Length: 94
Image 1 (cartoon, one colour):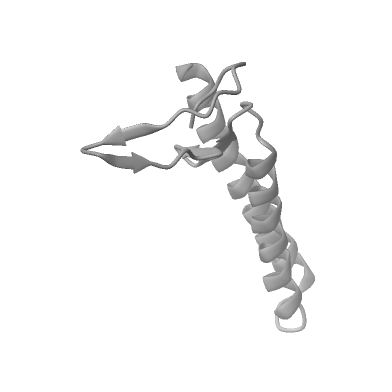
Image 2: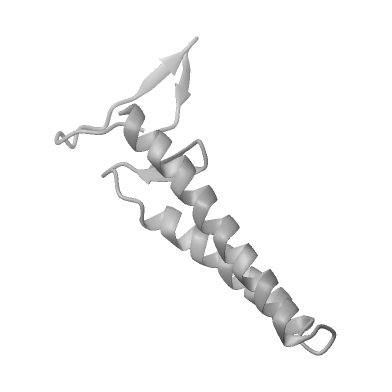
């Protein structure tokens, strides 16, 4: 991934093999695009939360409300703390 203001088409080679440019990169679980935006990362986190909620919907008739609520809060807490932990590591490193 090449970042900067120039819009040149740069080509990188290794032993006469062209290395394709990436439009985004994942570092420590955080996805950054070439403009240093987190849009793809936020979308990924939203997908994970949505998947967790879908699992809870499937088991809603099998578990009491208080237990479902506790599981929901745990999954939400786990997702958010993981994202924040990795996100602050990446931001702090640069």
